Length: 162
Image (cartoon, rainbow, N blue to C red; front, top):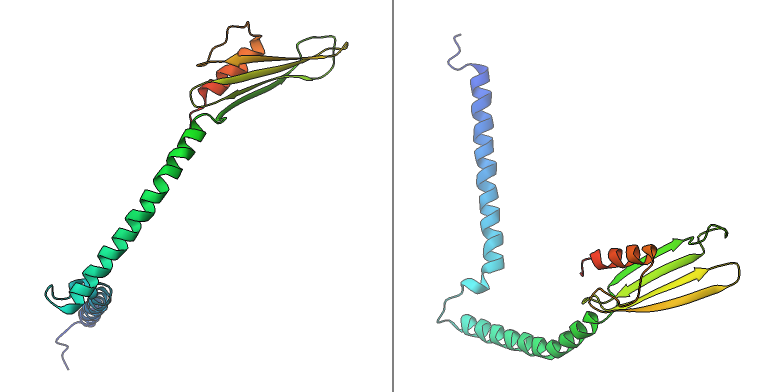
């Protein structure tokens, strides 16, 4: 008996037919799913379903617009409050004197979005602790700064607001 078709060719053909059947079934299922999801949107424009759907959309859009209008003043208040809140912080512990042990002194910079704020430094010595506060306006101060204070201020100024 003579083979008309090689077995490998028959298997490949069968696999191709099965693949096309699966692909076709996938398209049918996808089409049904899309129709079920978009069915209300695809209703006739002159039909009653389309008119009800349009009324519902208009109501929902109006309700969303009212909610957005009610939120706008609150968002503006929050944005204004955030502008002057502390957004940039620099901190460093250090030892300014070699006769004391440990990094008991520190500098702390607290700045808002516009680089305004305060620089607080505490210098620890054996005789006591002194605290200094320096006003920062637009990233600068009129008072002389220690090297550590300059470092802390520069760090705080380099922070990008979020």
